Each structure stands twice: as C-alpha cells, then as structure tokens.
Amino acid sequence: MEFKLPGFKNKKDVTDSSVSFEEKNIALQERMNRIYKFGGIGGMLIGGLSLLALNAELPLKTTVVDAYLIDKVTGVAERLTSVKKEHLSENEAIARYFITQYIKHREGYNFFSLQHDYDYVMAYSAENVAADYNALFNSEQAPKLVYNKAEKTAMVQDNPSVIISPSSRADDKDIGAYIRFRLTIRDVATGQTRQEFWNVRLTYRIEPQVEMVSGERNNNPLKFVVTSYVRDKEARG
Image (cartoon, rainbow, N blue to C red; front, top):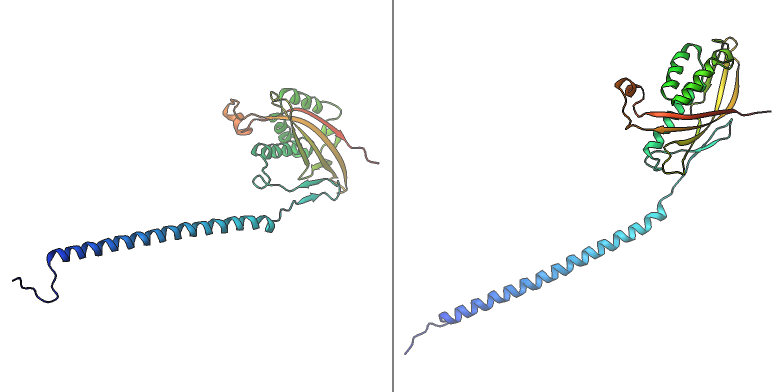
C-alpha cells in the first residue's frame, strides 16, 4: 500500500502546475504588450492630430506686415526688405550696394576727394563707360568747372531708389537698373543749399569668376562692372 502525506502532490502534478502557471504568465504578458502597443499608437495619433490642429490655427494668428518708407521730398516709396525675410537674392543685395556706391562717387562732388572718386568710378566701369567718364572730365561739363572747384559740394542722398530689371534674354549677362536720387548742392561760403533730382539708367555685371590680378581683386573683389550709363536731370518748374 502506497503511503502519501496529506496535501503532498506527486512530481507530475507539480510539474503540470508549474507549466500551467508559466503559460498564464506568458499569456498575461502578451495581453499587456498588446494593450501598451495600442495605447502607444493611440497616443501618437492624438499627438499628431493635436499638431495638425495647431498648424491649422497658426495662419489665423500670424500677421504679415509690409513696411514702406516714403521720402518726404521725392515721394518715392520703397518697401523695407531684408535678404532673409523678403527672399532678396544675395546677388541683388550686393548689386544694390555697389550701384549705390557707384552713384555716390560718380554724381557726388567734393573737390578734395575728386581724385579718389575718379579712380573709384574708373575701377568699376567697363572700358566704354570709363572712356565716356574720362571725356566728361576733359569737357566744359567737368565737375570741377560746374561746381567751381572748391566753392561747392554735391551730395547724393543716402538711400537712392534702385530698381533692378534682369534682361529677358538668358544669354545676356548685363542686368539693367534704374536709379532715382536727390542731389543736394551746397555753397561752401554761404552754407545755402539747393536740390536737384536725377534719373540714371545703367547696366552692370557681377562676374567674380573672372580672373584678375591680386591688386584688381582687392579693389573690386566681385568684379562688379557698369557696362552702360545714361543720366537725365528732372525738370522742375
């Protein structure tokens, strides 16, 4: 007769019970994983929908303002721009700078900086433009005669109106520009001033890839060159 202690299970019963317990744990873990997985996906969906809702609201809360600067004398209106905000191309921003400097040196006048201004204009002019400018200095309309040497000065306004107009031909390297500016002429002895208004039509090129000797590169690093230049004085009654 087999003797058994009360409450004691044989080896097979214990093994079966352990396997059953392990299977229950695995099944429970799988259920928990599925719950976490679906919960995570649900959270991602909710987050995505929240971002979409936020993006939909942003345009309603964003205000785009264009600022314009109006010259009190000339009435010229110019939109205030920056290279980043207004997507003003880098080349156009550079061109506006060089054009403004060129106009100031060419149209402005100070007897004591005349040689410097002359050299600057010659350095930034194509051969044909430089030849015309040199001829002007040897004519009756030479700046030193018009302004009576050191008796008068002429100053171009700081921010002339510059409108750039690229050529419609893809093979045309020249870019057009229209400039309107105020010229203030001052009598050095009396301090009295008068104003003139001028329009300039020019074409230019920017060719930094052109080979130059080091001295030329230092004076004109981006090879900005004015290829044509026409000026007209506004008639005012």
